[in-house]
Length: 353
Ligand code: NAD
Ligand code: IPM
Ligand code: MN
Image 1 (cartoon, rainbow, N blue to C red):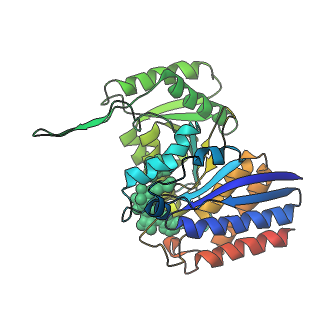
Image 2 (cartoon, helix red, strand yellow):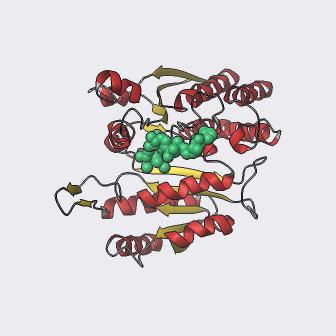
Image 3 (cartoon, helix red, strand yellow):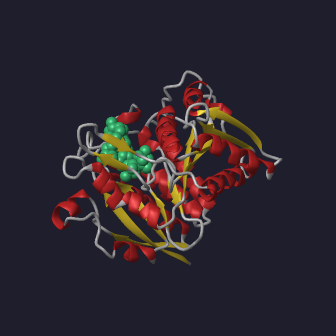
């Protein structure tokens, strides 16, 4: 029996609706599978917690999380209560950084039953590998100079180590897929970091002669996601480019509400964290209509991470079947609630037993 202790942080907004949904699905999978058991330990860390305690998590929060096999997170952010840069850097980004979750994997594919807004979705299926620890999200050297001539400065930091690491990860992943890596660059405009990014990409690709490569400027690449998404297999991108590309990845599937993500710790010192691409969606929170698929597909990535790829595939197929049968939330053209979609997925998983 494989026993997995998972730290659960629903967080804010629809995180509190889609996380319980995904936990029901994981419990059902464990029930059906037999050889797998989850213990979920929930933490209320969120903007509400901040209002009460003046911090997003307790001072020993990271120590508490460290012993878990993985962290399963919903979304963080309630700008009406706490400014985003405080809430995000106090919880989500803090965990990513301190737990050295240096790679962010974000798949997107043509999803059966979903109204893709694309005229020619052409069965696209790609994974964006996003650098998750540095780049444009650097904490180093930035500041705001106040006074008559105010200036805000943000430094982008691209280390050789971090850049090479994310690229190698992308190439290794491509070897297990269609053998193609696309680099997201902007070396025509961003003077120092992106020529460096290209230089490292050229060097890393020498080690993978069996992998095909290409490289597009991020502006053109974003357009190709819309016009020719089938071109892509693995796309490697810096932190900010990867962030933007993956909301677009969700959008071309049909909704950002279905896009999954995994923040991976590579050195085994800390747990990895699984959270969907979308945020806390304050505009729909409380209506019971949040799409749970992003969080449930994220649970599939967690199953893959634990070596349960077969179960993961069964889960993804079940989600697609339910969607194709029209049981879907309003963001993807349906009338079902979060609960109805979740119950249907659980029901079909039980029927497989
Ligand atoms: P968002 O992803 O929360 O919402 C963007 C749009 O997508 C909204 O119209 C929303 O209703 C819709 N949407 C998102 N998820 C959905 C779902 N599951 N089902 C149906 N519709 C869905 O982005 P935002 O509005 O820019 O951010 C809201 C808050 O979330 C902010 O505080 C932001 O900082 C935070 N945020 C957190 C994360 C995270 O924790 N990983 C990610 C992105 C944004
Ligand atoms: C994401 C989010 C975060 C990011 C924000 C909320 C800090 O947009 O996970 O995609 O930019 O990484
Ligand atoms: Mn984002």
